[in-house]
Length: 235
Image (tube, rainbow, N blue to C red; front, side, top):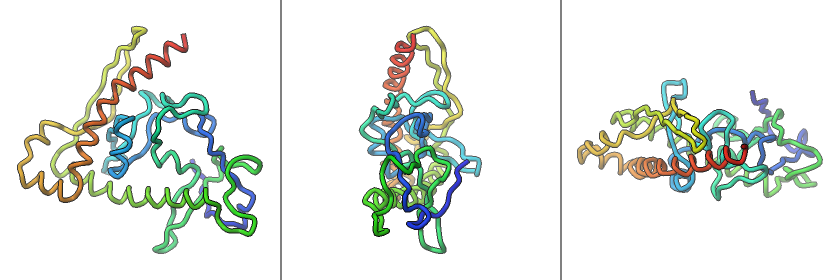
């Protein structure tokens, strides 16, 4: 569990963040939270699917692998894709609120924190470094993106456009694998929507996001290829 505290230049004056990618820093994850504002950039690299969030709604996820703890884009300290979801980039920071004001928290239990390596968070005179300012911008983008995601998934549910699916995969080594527990866009129901419904989705900016999700499904083939290469390298 995260151990977030409000970031400040007194208690955390000497704190640094290791920005290197790697399993030791928490990057060995199967998926990452995403939202419609990111779909255009992520759909060219990752399948985008939906998962029930336990609160009666659904979250959009960019998939990196087929099982928990598997990130097929991670190769040592290298992330093999030009776009990394912001929800990965923001670690070890979290966004919080102080009344109506958004504030930055840091997870004190994150393995990314250090006193002798990585990006400094504060200047000698106490001001924010460029890195800290960039992370604050990332957190603001996440906050706004997740706010917009709620109306997007509400529209999908209103039009009954989500369907569960499973994906059976036979790898080159003959092993069988199944991806289950996720949802995607029901293409037949989408095609059956009348003009008024489509116009409403378009006016709200949801229609483009829907097509970005559908386009992202072509990345399953590339993800399977990554899985085969990873298995071949382990033999």
